[in-house]
Image (cartoon, rainbow, N blue to C red):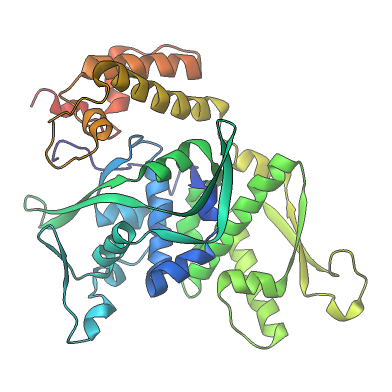
Length: 379
Protein backbone atom coordinates (compact mmCIF):
# COMPACT_ATOMS: atom_id res chain seq x y z
CA UNK A 1 0.00 0.00 0.00
CA UNK A 2 3.04 2.29 -0.07
CA UNK A 3 2.18 3.01 -3.70
CA UNK A 4 -0.82 5.08 -2.67
CA UNK A 5 -0.30 8.81 -2.60
CA UNK A 6 -0.70 10.88 0.52
CA UNK A 7 -4.12 12.43 0.67
CA UNK A 8 -5.03 15.98 -0.02
CA UNK A 9 -2.65 18.69 -1.10
CA UNK A 10 -4.95 21.70 -0.86
CA UNK A 11 -3.59 25.18 -0.02
CA UNK A 12 -6.49 25.93 2.30
CA UNK A 13 -5.07 29.20 3.54
CA UNK A 14 -5.16 30.73 0.06
CA UNK A 15 -7.79 28.88 -1.95
CA UNK A 16 -11.53 28.54 -1.52
CA UNK A 17 -12.34 24.86 -1.20
CA UNK A 18 -15.95 23.76 -1.53
CA UNK A 19 -16.52 20.49 0.28
CA UNK A 20 -19.49 18.25 0.94
CA UNK A 21 -20.98 16.69 4.03
CA UNK A 22 -23.50 13.86 4.06
CA UNK A 23 -26.94 15.27 4.86
CA UNK A 24 -27.68 12.33 7.12
CA UNK A 25 -24.66 13.25 9.26
CA UNK A 26 -25.13 17.03 9.07
CA UNK A 27 -28.72 16.62 10.27
CA UNK A 28 -27.47 14.55 13.22
CA UNK A 29 -24.42 16.44 14.49
CA UNK A 30 -25.74 16.10 18.05
CA UNK A 31 -25.55 12.31 17.66
CA UNK A 32 -21.75 12.50 17.52
CA UNK A 33 -21.58 13.32 21.23
CA UNK A 34 -24.00 10.53 22.13
CA UNK A 35 -22.04 7.97 20.10
CA UNK A 36 -18.42 9.02 20.68
CA UNK A 37 -18.63 10.84 24.01
CA UNK A 38 -15.72 13.12 24.86
CA UNK A 39 -14.12 12.25 21.50
CA UNK A 40 -17.02 13.59 19.43
CA UNK A 41 -15.28 16.83 18.44
CA UNK A 42 -12.30 15.05 16.89
CA UNK A 43 -14.71 12.58 15.28
CA UNK A 44 -16.54 15.55 13.71
CA UNK A 45 -13.23 16.99 12.50
CA UNK A 46 -12.33 13.66 10.93
CA UNK A 47 -15.63 13.55 9.03
CA UNK A 48 -14.90 17.03 7.67
CA UNK A 49 -11.34 16.07 6.78
CA UNK A 50 -12.22 12.84 5.01
CA UNK A 51 -15.18 14.40 3.20
CA UNK A 52 -12.83 17.07 1.87
CA UNK A 53 -10.27 14.47 0.80
CA UNK A 54 -12.95 12.71 -1.26
CA UNK A 55 -12.74 15.60 -3.69
CA UNK A 56 -9.44 14.09 -4.82
CA UNK A 57 -9.44 10.58 -3.34
CA UNK A 58 -12.67 9.62 -5.05
CA UNK A 59 -12.61 5.90 -4.35
CA UNK A 60 -12.91 5.96 -0.59
CA UNK A 61 -9.44 4.50 -0.05
CA UNK A 62 -7.23 7.17 1.44
CA UNK A 63 -3.74 7.50 2.82
CA UNK A 64 -2.87 10.43 5.08
CA UNK A 65 -0.73 11.59 7.97
CA UNK A 66 -1.65 13.49 11.10
CA UNK A 67 -0.15 16.60 9.48
CA UNK A 68 -2.64 16.30 6.60
CA UNK A 69 -5.48 16.12 9.11
CA UNK A 70 -4.23 19.08 11.16
CA UNK A 71 -3.81 21.27 8.08
CA UNK A 72 -7.43 20.83 7.03
CA UNK A 73 -9.21 21.06 10.40
CA UNK A 74 -6.77 23.12 12.49
CA UNK A 75 -6.44 20.85 15.51
CA UNK A 76 -3.54 20.91 18.01
CA UNK A 77 -0.90 18.24 17.44
CA UNK A 78 -0.08 17.93 21.13
CA UNK A 79 -3.68 17.09 21.94
CA UNK A 80 -3.87 14.47 19.19
CA UNK A 81 -0.53 12.88 20.11
CA UNK A 82 -1.18 12.69 23.84
CA UNK A 83 -2.16 9.50 25.64
CA UNK A 84 -5.92 8.92 25.54
CA UNK A 85 -7.78 9.33 28.82
CA UNK A 86 -9.15 5.77 28.71
CA UNK A 87 -5.68 4.72 29.86
CA UNK A 88 -5.96 6.87 32.99
CA UNK A 89 -7.56 3.81 34.55
CA UNK A 90 -4.52 1.69 35.41
CA UNK A 91 -6.59 -1.47 35.07
CA UNK A 92 -7.63 -0.61 31.50
CA UNK A 93 -6.27 -2.87 28.78
CA UNK A 94 -4.65 -1.18 25.80
CA UNK A 95 -6.85 -1.54 22.71
CA UNK A 96 -5.04 -3.51 20.02
CA UNK A 97 -6.02 -4.28 16.42
CA UNK A 98 -3.92 -5.96 13.73
CA UNK A 99 -0.80 -5.57 15.84
CA UNK A 100 -1.25 -1.84 16.47
CA UNK A 101 -1.84 -0.45 19.95
CA UNK A 102 -4.27 2.48 20.12
CA UNK A 103 -2.71 4.71 22.74
CA UNK A 104 -2.81 8.27 21.38
CA UNK A 105 -5.97 10.35 21.21
CA UNK A 106 -5.93 10.47 17.41
CA UNK A 107 -5.38 6.73 16.96
CA UNK A 108 -8.08 5.86 19.46
CA UNK A 109 -10.66 8.12 17.78
CA UNK A 110 -9.95 6.42 14.45
CA UNK A 111 -10.46 3.09 16.19
CA UNK A 112 -13.83 4.32 17.49
CA UNK A 113 -14.87 5.45 14.02
CA UNK A 114 -14.10 1.98 12.71
CA UNK A 115 -15.56 -0.07 15.54
CA UNK A 116 -18.63 2.01 16.41
CA UNK A 117 -21.29 3.14 13.92
CA UNK A 118 -22.65 6.66 14.31
CA UNK A 119 -26.20 6.17 15.63
CA UNK A 120 -28.52 8.98 14.55
CA UNK A 121 -30.68 10.94 16.99
CA UNK A 122 -33.46 10.80 14.42
CA UNK A 123 -33.80 8.52 11.42
CA UNK A 124 -32.83 9.99 8.06
CA UNK A 125 -34.96 9.13 5.03
CA UNK A 126 -34.13 9.59 1.36
CA UNK A 127 -35.35 8.35 -2.01
CA UNK A 128 -33.28 5.83 -3.94
CA UNK A 129 -34.64 4.80 -7.34
CA UNK A 130 -38.18 5.60 -6.25
CA UNK A 131 -37.87 3.70 -2.98
CA UNK A 132 -37.74 5.35 0.45
CA UNK A 133 -34.66 4.30 2.41
CA UNK A 134 -34.51 4.96 6.14
CA UNK A 135 -31.15 5.19 7.88
CA UNK A 136 -30.79 4.72 11.65
CA UNK A 137 -27.03 5.20 11.60
CA UNK A 138 -23.94 5.00 9.43
CA UNK A 139 -20.55 3.30 9.42
CA UNK A 140 -17.69 5.75 8.83
CA UNK A 141 -14.45 3.75 8.52
CA UNK A 142 -14.65 0.23 7.14
CA UNK A 143 -10.97 -0.67 7.24
CA UNK A 144 -8.04 0.92 9.06
CA UNK A 145 -4.33 0.23 8.85
CA UNK A 146 -1.60 2.20 10.63
CA UNK A 147 2.04 1.87 9.64
CA UNK A 148 5.23 3.65 10.67
CA UNK A 149 7.24 5.43 8.00
CA UNK A 150 10.81 4.71 9.08
CA UNK A 151 12.16 6.87 6.24
CA UNK A 152 10.33 9.93 7.53
CA UNK A 153 11.15 10.23 11.22
CA UNK A 154 8.98 7.25 12.23
CA UNK A 155 5.82 9.24 11.52
CA UNK A 156 2.59 7.28 11.27
CA UNK A 157 0.79 6.76 7.99
CA UNK A 158 -2.93 5.97 8.06
CA UNK A 159 -4.63 3.92 5.35
CA UNK A 160 -8.40 3.79 5.55
CA UNK A 161 -11.30 2.60 3.47
CA UNK A 162 -14.62 4.33 3.96
CA UNK A 163 -17.94 2.53 4.10
CA UNK A 164 -20.15 2.29 1.04
CA UNK A 165 -22.89 4.27 2.83
CA UNK A 166 -20.46 7.10 3.54
CA UNK A 167 -19.34 7.21 -0.10
CA UNK A 168 -22.94 7.19 -1.30
CA UNK A 169 -23.66 10.15 0.94
CA UNK A 170 -20.79 12.10 -0.61
CA UNK A 171 -22.05 11.38 -4.12
CA UNK A 172 -25.83 11.58 -3.81
CA UNK A 173 -27.03 13.24 -0.58
CA UNK A 174 -25.01 16.17 0.68
CA UNK A 175 -24.79 19.80 1.68
CA UNK A 176 -21.97 21.95 0.36
CA UNK A 177 -19.88 24.20 2.58
CA UNK A 178 -16.65 26.14 2.29
CA UNK A 179 -14.05 24.23 4.27
CA UNK A 180 -11.52 27.09 4.09
CA UNK A 181 -13.06 28.90 7.06
CA UNK A 182 -13.51 25.80 9.20
CA UNK A 183 -10.03 25.65 10.81
CA UNK A 184 -9.93 29.45 11.16
CA UNK A 185 -13.02 29.66 13.37
CA UNK A 186 -11.72 26.80 15.52
CA UNK A 187 -8.70 28.66 16.87
CA UNK A 188 -8.76 29.61 20.54
CA UNK A 189 -11.15 29.01 23.40
CA UNK A 190 -14.59 27.86 22.29
CA UNK A 191 -13.25 26.77 18.91
CA UNK A 192 -15.17 23.50 18.77
CA UNK A 193 -18.44 25.29 19.47
CA UNK A 194 -17.73 27.76 16.67
CA UNK A 195 -16.90 24.92 14.28
CA UNK A 196 -20.26 23.29 14.96
CA UNK A 197 -22.04 26.64 14.53
CA UNK A 198 -20.15 27.18 11.25
CA UNK A 199 -21.38 23.82 9.96
CA UNK A 200 -24.94 24.45 11.11
CA UNK A 201 -25.15 27.85 9.42
CA UNK A 202 -23.47 26.51 6.26
CA UNK A 203 -26.09 23.77 6.15
CA UNK A 204 -28.84 26.36 6.67
CA UNK A 205 -27.37 28.47 3.88
CA UNK A 206 -27.44 25.47 1.54
CA UNK A 207 -31.06 24.75 2.48
CA UNK A 208 -32.12 28.37 2.07
CA UNK A 209 -30.46 28.56 -1.33
CA UNK A 210 -32.36 25.44 -2.41
CA UNK A 211 -35.64 26.81 -1.03
CA UNK A 212 -34.96 30.32 -2.38
CA UNK A 213 -35.26 31.76 1.13
CA UNK A 214 -32.92 34.51 2.32
CA UNK A 215 -33.59 34.80 6.08
CA UNK A 216 -33.73 32.45 9.05
CA UNK A 217 -34.60 33.14 12.70
CA UNK A 218 -32.91 31.46 15.67
CA UNK A 219 -33.25 31.88 19.40
CA UNK A 220 -30.10 32.64 21.37
CA UNK A 221 -30.84 29.58 23.50
CA UNK A 222 -30.92 27.37 20.40
CA UNK A 223 -27.57 28.68 19.16
CA UNK A 224 -26.08 28.23 22.63
CA UNK A 225 -27.15 24.59 22.56
CA UNK A 226 -25.49 24.16 19.16
CA UNK A 227 -22.26 25.67 20.51
CA UNK A 228 -22.44 23.84 23.85
CA UNK A 229 -22.52 27.16 25.74
CA UNK A 230 -23.81 26.71 29.29
CA UNK A 231 -24.00 30.22 30.81
CA UNK A 232 -27.12 30.65 32.94
CA UNK A 233 -27.38 34.43 32.52
CA UNK A 234 -29.24 35.41 29.30
CA UNK A 235 -27.01 38.46 28.83
CA UNK A 236 -23.88 36.28 28.96
CA UNK A 237 -25.33 33.85 26.42
CA UNK A 238 -26.19 36.74 24.12
CA UNK A 239 -22.70 38.23 24.51
CA UNK A 240 -20.94 34.98 23.66
CA UNK A 241 -23.16 34.18 20.68
CA UNK A 242 -22.47 37.68 19.37
CA UNK A 243 -18.74 37.03 19.69
CA UNK A 244 -19.05 33.66 17.96
CA UNK A 245 -21.07 35.02 15.05
CA UNK A 246 -18.60 37.86 14.56
CA UNK A 247 -15.74 35.34 14.45
CA UNK A 248 -17.56 33.30 11.80
CA UNK A 249 -18.01 36.43 9.70
CA UNK A 250 -14.58 38.02 10.23
CA UNK A 251 -12.27 34.99 10.38
CA UNK A 252 -14.36 32.28 8.74
CA UNK A 253 -15.57 34.70 6.05
CA UNK A 254 -19.08 33.25 6.24
CA UNK A 255 -21.30 35.41 4.05
CA UNK A 256 -24.01 36.32 6.53
CA UNK A 257 -25.22 39.32 8.48
CA UNK A 258 -27.41 39.22 11.58
CA UNK A 259 -29.45 41.37 13.94
CA UNK A 260 -31.19 40.81 17.26
CA UNK A 261 -34.96 40.98 16.84
CA UNK A 262 -38.31 40.08 18.33
CA UNK A 263 -39.19 36.41 18.19
CA UNK A 264 -40.24 35.63 14.62
CA UNK A 265 -43.97 36.30 14.41
CA UNK A 266 -44.13 38.02 17.81
CA UNK A 267 -44.01 41.61 19.05
CA UNK A 268 -43.44 40.72 22.69
CA UNK A 269 -40.96 43.36 23.88
CA UNK A 270 -39.84 41.12 26.77
CA UNK A 271 -38.05 38.73 24.42
CA UNK A 272 -36.55 41.33 22.11
CA UNK A 273 -32.84 40.85 21.75
CA UNK A 274 -32.87 37.11 22.36
CA UNK A 275 -33.79 36.10 18.84
CA UNK A 276 -31.46 36.51 15.89
CA UNK A 277 -32.42 37.14 12.28
CA UNK A 278 -29.71 35.79 9.98
CA UNK A 279 -29.43 37.17 6.47
CA UNK A 280 -27.83 34.65 4.11
CA UNK A 281 -26.48 37.22 1.70
CA UNK A 282 -26.45 36.76 -2.09
CA UNK A 283 -22.68 36.36 -1.85
CA UNK A 284 -23.34 33.19 0.13
CA UNK A 285 -24.96 31.65 -2.91
CA UNK A 286 -21.68 32.07 -4.74
CA UNK A 287 -19.70 30.93 -1.69
CA UNK A 288 -21.41 27.53 -1.56
CA UNK A 289 -21.90 26.96 -5.26
CA UNK A 290 -20.35 23.76 -6.47
CA UNK A 291 -20.30 23.65 -10.25
CA UNK A 292 -22.78 21.36 -11.94
CA UNK A 293 -19.81 19.89 -13.78
CA UNK A 294 -18.16 18.83 -10.50
CA UNK A 295 -21.38 17.22 -9.32
CA UNK A 296 -21.90 15.45 -12.64
CA UNK A 297 -18.31 14.24 -12.82
CA UNK A 298 -18.27 12.62 -9.38
CA UNK A 299 -21.62 10.97 -10.02
CA UNK A 300 -20.91 9.44 -13.41
CA UNK A 301 -17.32 8.45 -12.62
CA UNK A 302 -18.43 6.36 -9.66
CA UNK A 303 -21.26 4.76 -11.62
CA UNK A 304 -19.20 4.08 -14.75
CA UNK A 305 -16.26 2.54 -12.89
CA UNK A 306 -18.61 0.20 -11.03
CA UNK A 307 -20.32 -0.70 -14.31
CA UNK A 308 -16.96 -1.37 -15.97
CA UNK A 309 -15.86 -3.57 -13.09
CA UNK A 310 -19.11 -5.53 -13.27
CA UNK A 311 -18.69 -6.04 -17.01
CA UNK A 312 -15.12 -7.24 -16.57
CA UNK A 313 -15.40 -9.47 -13.53
CA UNK A 314 -18.97 -9.78 -12.31
CA UNK A 315 -18.96 -11.65 -9.00
CA UNK A 316 -15.66 -13.38 -9.68
CA UNK A 317 -13.20 -13.39 -6.77
CA UNK A 318 -10.02 -11.37 -7.26
CA UNK A 319 -6.70 -11.79 -5.51
CA UNK A 320 -4.97 -8.46 -6.06
CA UNK A 321 -4.42 -7.49 -2.44
CA UNK A 322 -4.79 -9.72 0.59
CA UNK A 323 -5.47 -6.69 2.80
CA UNK A 324 -8.57 -5.69 0.81
CA UNK A 325 -11.71 -7.79 1.19
CA UNK A 326 -14.06 -5.91 -1.15
CA UNK A 327 -13.62 -6.95 -4.83
CA UNK A 328 -14.51 -3.57 -6.33
CA UNK A 329 -12.29 -1.59 -3.95
CA UNK A 330 -9.52 -4.11 -4.52
CA UNK A 331 -9.80 -3.48 -8.25
CA UNK A 332 -10.30 0.28 -8.35
CA UNK A 333 -7.42 1.08 -5.98
CA UNK A 334 -4.91 -1.24 -7.65
CA UNK A 335 -2.77 0.71 -10.16
CA UNK A 336 -1.35 -2.42 -11.78
CA UNK A 337 -4.69 -3.79 -12.95
CA UNK A 338 -6.65 -2.49 -15.96
CA UNK A 339 -5.05 0.95 -15.77
CA UNK A 340 -5.81 1.71 -19.43
CA UNK A 341 -9.47 0.84 -18.89
CA UNK A 342 -9.75 3.01 -15.79
CA UNK A 343 -8.02 5.87 -17.58
CA UNK A 344 -10.44 5.55 -20.50
CA UNK A 345 -13.43 5.72 -18.13
CA UNK A 346 -11.91 8.74 -16.38
CA UNK A 347 -11.27 10.59 -19.65
CA UNK A 348 -14.76 9.87 -20.95
CA UNK A 349 -16.44 11.05 -17.73
CA UNK A 350 -14.27 14.17 -17.67
CA UNK A 351 -15.27 14.99 -21.24
CA UNK A 352 -18.97 14.47 -20.51
CA UNK A 353 -18.91 16.57 -17.34
CA UNK A 354 -16.61 19.43 -18.29
CA UNK A 355 -17.27 19.49 -22.05
CA UNK A 356 -13.60 19.31 -22.89
CA UNK A 357 -11.14 16.55 -23.62
CA UNK A 358 -7.97 15.82 -21.70
CA UNK A 359 -4.89 13.94 -22.84
CA UNK A 360 -3.77 10.59 -21.50
CA UNK A 361 -0.96 12.38 -19.66
CA UNK A 362 -3.40 14.82 -18.06
CA UNK A 363 -5.68 11.97 -17.03
CA UNK A 364 -2.75 10.09 -15.50
CA UNK A 365 -1.74 13.21 -13.60
CA UNK A 366 -5.24 13.83 -12.26
CA UNK A 367 -5.75 10.19 -11.35
CA UNK A 368 -2.47 10.16 -9.44
CA UNK A 369 -4.13 12.51 -6.95
CA UNK A 370 -6.73 9.86 -6.18
CA UNK A 371 -6.39 6.47 -4.57
CA UNK A 372 -5.11 5.20 -7.93
CA UNK A 373 -1.49 6.27 -8.08
CA UNK A 374 -0.02 6.32 -11.57
CA UNK A 375 3.54 6.63 -10.25
CA UNK A 376 3.49 3.04 -9.07
CA UNK A 377 2.75 1.56 -12.49
CA UNK A 378 6.39 1.43 -13.43
CA UNK A 379 7.51 0.17 -10.02
